[in-house]
Length: 169
Image (cartoon, rainbow, N blue to C red):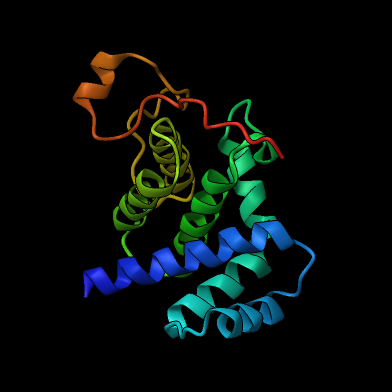
């Protein structure tokens, strides 16, 4: 079942990524046309997630920009933006454990984004999860992100926020 869930997330990611290149299109119409043009069918999860991310995109983007120090969404690669949006939507709207959501986002980033993006995605999503109270903060004294490799080795939580790949859009 986990493989099917991963496949569904990846399909939702693919749709959201494609929608980035036709931002003005109505989400429901885009979804219908995508299915027709590709002669495929998706699980309800894919449709509901795609439409949900599109509907809540402004709220999701504000949450991402609120924790991405020095990185506006417009500077992030399209793949990175899309992975983050999908994961934040799931944090906001599903009962899936947050660690599963983050792990799935990292796996999608590994497959579709450059090698530097996974640490960035991990760091952003962990900050959002902590802000939402979905995971406990590593340090209550400071929310700043450390770049110490010793701290990274001692903690399963991210401690650095590498720069994502820049977009040429």
